[in-house]
Length: 565
Image (cartoon, helix red, strand yellow):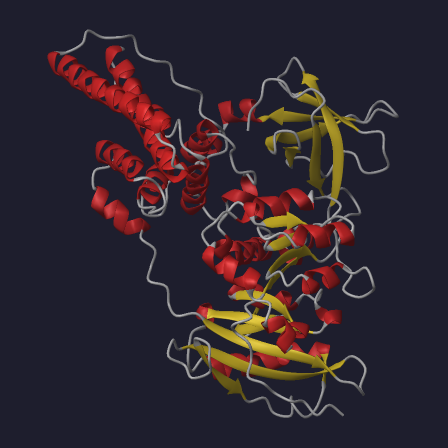
């Protein structure tokens, strides 16, 4: 990321100075540019580390711009008491290291327009045709606008407003194309696409973000975690990304995803398809590439962990495989096949031994489905809701242990909600099912407030879940879990430990830049990103500390009765 003025921007750098093999964070602020092109950094006047030997070569993260702005290269050592260091800014690095630009590290410099050329006869005819279309659209707009003014029915008024909005978009698009043709050029790919997307409504904006997320590389969020807030920034971001494995440009994939979205208007779909025909050789092949594979049936491994009343810190275990069956006689869309666990139901186990039972559970379930088709649902007592069950390791092959939450989706559920009282509170879950393609950010509230304020917020009909950037306390009178369980919200995401080096509220908000139905996949992706990082850095990644509560009152284990000793 490049910027001309970074004065006073707060930054952070992660390095390995002498005596700190696990690494430490240094913070500071940026100053101005020096004569050699470097930029000066200074440590802030608070206790903590400063940039020193061991930080050289580390990326410098700018908190204001939410991106890497340079590479740490030197620290002042000759003057005692001076906490200054230096970085090479990205614009200097890009001049000497072309790999960075090719890998998507920098926003390309805008290309200058070519001088206008004399218009050809074909171009003139095209302009005349477009101007005829423009006159017809203007006449339609005036006619519908007059009709709307006379209409007294509110529903019909809304229909007419939507028609006016669609016509206005078409007028804008045609005017853009006429202006480009009159300048003697058809415009660059990005300019034409920007003209198409210039005047979209808020629901379409959310679909644009969804297409962007579907088109970017899986690791892109680690490099640029923030989702662009404007169309111009979003298209520039796509242009920076390396091509997909299929060879297609990311911007082509983005347009293909968006044009195939049934939730955008037919007119916009047609404009995007026309854009593809002009810029992609084989549009049919591209659309085949972005078609989601037929999803396999989703199986659920339901693991109920119940505390023993007699043996402290020991638990009884029971498990079922929920097999999809729309005609099931169980009253739900699943058949529940019990998993046989030797002595686990009659004899309590210490918590540390439960991961060993997962191997037997997976062996039995593998006869019905692949691990990748599984979602683990852990029904937990209140005191274990904050436990890192997604980090329990499973053996993929000999001597290869992988965290469960990396290999498949893992959610937690409360055993308290297995009571008949909760099963009657399905209103919020039913609303979540209806809005599963709705932006998560519109339906999820922040839970980092007083418990009584959170209770009032979660009682609202349009709020279906909450995020917790502060570590929740599972027990106690004012525990946030009392509110979550009491209001019967089906969704909650929280951080299990304090991560002082991260803005956890911001990280959680970025997770919500997707549809509700995509949240489990997004969180699994964060867990995988944490696991793929250097072992010394995994504990610093938010993906190592995320819990997702995802309650479906229509999918519960068969009624059982424990005789706990």
